[in-house]
Image (spheres, helix red, strand yellow):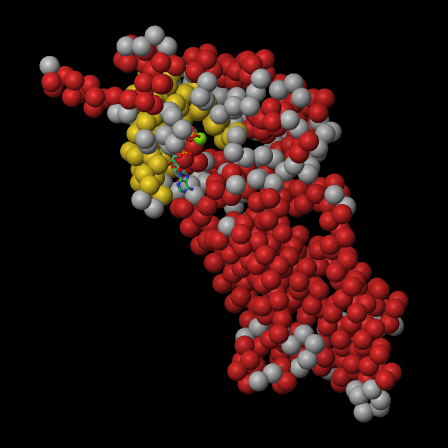
Length: 255
Length: 265
Ligand SMILES: Nc1ncnc2c1ncn2[C@@H]1O[C@H](COP(=O)(O)OP(=O)(O)OP(=O)(O)O)[C@@H](O)[C@H]1O
Ligand SMILES: [Mg+2]
């Protein structure tokens, strides 16, 4: 069996009396892309922030590369990276300056050539000398992705990486995701509201609803489990139908 | 603390200054205005008040320079953090392999750089305009200045902690914190002139010893090492407490998800 890169057990987060993540458990194995799916407010970003150590869990356990996260935070973070729609790189620096700063923070060897490489990969080499704040939303997302790839992370967390991309670029980004998985064995946690994305890049999916995991499995297993034709339909049903499992149980009980 | 990480964070700050030189104006403009106002006031007093007025009135110029060193050091630290808040970069930094010590270390480096720019510039200009050479006072001034830098750093960390705790709405505090203490800091007048209660506050602030010390050097040319010692001890207490406060606030911030909130505001 492939080594376990990320192991999440009974992860829970309360913000005051709001429960954002409620007893979530899942694993990601080496070289796998795991899709974390769920409606707005399902708790995906909160879960990712906990894996990044930027939000402390109320309960549960997170192990990255077989190590407890908070006890080994710096060591673990050095081999991880993330890209999120919720952050930007400083808008007043040029693109190469931003990448240089983060490359140094992540101790990237041969930084200058690595910067050229990631810019090339995301096809924004021509923007290298531009000021980051002047980029369009999609170009900014691609810059974020460049930052996320700089240190060749073993675990990459992508929170809606294709949210502001046009279909052409979104397609290319999916290509990059698949490429680093196949060529570098990068393990990836991926959230997206675009089911096409998910079908194309994710090896398995975790469906979250109101902070809980409803189902974990491959796309086919998910379709089979929910008896739907597409992930999109599953998504809508989960989002509208509330707790599907318990609906089923009550259905079965009334039979 | 890891040197490469601190260097990277400082590098970001330097890029910022080369990218937007208008920021340098802030570093130059206010200190310059203060120096001019207080410098000419000093000259006016010297010429018009008469002989019974102590010649050492020039300490006002020294006070302006030293106060600005303290203020720039504090600002360096607070603005360093605010830059990350303003640019929605906080999450990128704190989800990267950056420890609290790395972050604080780089804020201090930036605070020192800002303070150096200010002190060299004001020192030079005061010689030029008022023939007041602060560096001629005594080399003993160096440990005094060092104490100011340390205190500025502590105040900066406290301001930053307030911003983490209360959100960007507390930004104005970052500018105000040094002025909360200015009345008690004995910047322009001796501690003895304060009412007794306020004197106690003054004595709890390391910077009051620095300003008293500066006046001491100017009036009788003697360095009061005892006061310098007290200031240093107090400073390390403040530094320790401010550091603890920062670490605590960051822990709380992680619990309440404050860092992510700023990122998306
Ligand atoms: N810092 C915070 N303080 C209080 N509540 C929070 C905080 N962060 C998230 N929440 C709450 O936790 C819940 C889950 O939010 P989260 O951002 O994880 O959802 P999400 O699945 O990423 O949704 P989306 O698809 O909209 O990005 C929401 O109800 C949100 O209001
Ligand atoms: Mg989200």
